[in-house]
Image 1 (cartoon, rainbow, N blue to C red):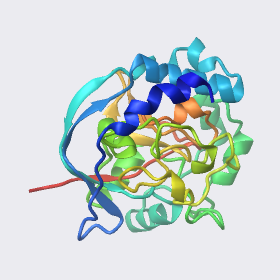
Image 2 (cartoon, helix red, strand yellow):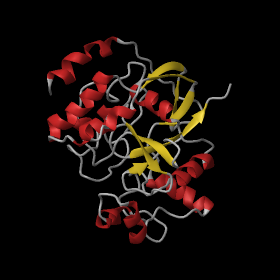
Image 3 (tube, rainbow, N blue to C red):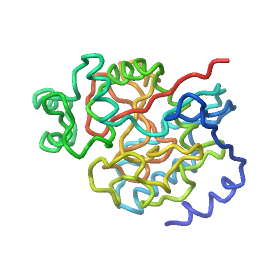
Image 4 (tube, helix red, strand yellow):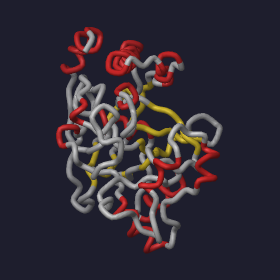
Length: 278
């Protein structure tokens, strides 16, 4: 790791940290306390993201296209809220499909081609549901191939909602504003990403040492997560967290970009949140 990635982060460890409380009637969620939160990243933190990709993979794509320049600092007050400890799984989503009659996660080859993504349809096939059911052995994997409306509907069915992108970021990095959920140094053993992952989803909660300060799993890597926050004015929504095929810079807690609401992607899932009422 280069000096800029390590030496410049010492002060971040000195900031105070808080922990979440387990909610009494929401066993799969934690209560994240109210705070005044500084979202986004400094110029130095963005440079760390670029350097990580260059150091680990000799990749200059992020720097060339200035991917991380959308992470501008923003002060925001966040009310207390509940959020899922784990990503929504195929098993979870199946109950929703059975109860509501909503279509199972699926995308056909023609629709996939219209997305103009780098992944070939051959890669999609292992994620497709067959006869309304996920494939054997993938019950505990995060559900993918769900668009934004699907995610919103599922969370509403559970009596919740999608988190805002700033709630998500706060839950991922805590008050110390860590670069990653576990701290400020990249560690490929703590997440499912391109570096040491199987180039596929894995059961949620598999990376015990990758938890966020509030005890949440898979907030870096595994799959990107839909949020409720619009990304510009072009029908996109902000997604967070990075995925199983991403380099380190994209898996930082402040990294963000937008995806069209209609997109059903193999690297995109979600978790739910719920406002804390008085």
